[in-house]
Length: 226
Ligand code: ADP
Ligand code: ADP
Image (cartoon, rainbow, N blue to C red; front, side):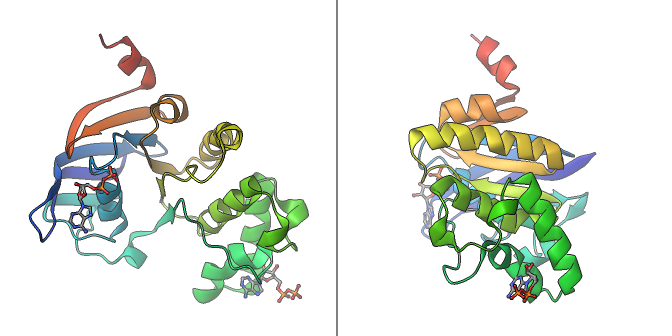
């Protein structure tokens, strides 16, 4: 089944910039799709349209089969993981992860259950009472992922989540993300300009250039393309 469908999605900014030109992509349920391309090719714009943070100029976006073009971000049941993860410094890891759920008025027992489960998946169980300042960069990035995971969304959207980490940590965390995505089985659209990341992380890779989709395929298929 299709989890997310972009059908000839176009973004024209008010100043006339054609950032995304008739982009069509179909993510199946549980799929990990990478959107890769050089800076300025329209990746973030595409992701932000899926998230509902940017108006779609033309085309149709469907999530779980339903048209969501006009739906606000909150109505879309998707969680975004950014590169600039701002954790609340005065809150514990558990409270950082549970904050959105508290705002959504979930019961304390439910928040607690989800936070514990996410912490277990993310290998953060030992650190739930710590403050972000007492964690390593990689652990902080995992807390940021935890905040998305506890929402149990239909899909994750990730915009260069590793770009703030140093090279070694980036490779480690990349492997972690792949493992976690497979374990949760949550449909994921992941944006990066890093070709190595693109070729090692996802089930399929979509290559964009100047707002236009060039190719879509498994890393294997793309390697074998002359
Ligand atoms: P990427 O994420 O691949 O770096 P972006 O989606 O950020 O690319 O940008 C795609 C194009 O749209 C670029 O030419 C960029 O300058 C332009 N752009 C991005 N945001 C805006 C905006 N708010 N107004 C006008 N043009 C924009
Ligand atoms: P403590 O007794 O340690 O101060 P609480 O009893 O207030 O903690 O909360 C227990 C659990 O409920 C936390 O571990 C957390 O999962 C959740 N929780 C409580 N307050 C918040 C909050 N402000 N934001 C997010 N989660 C919270």
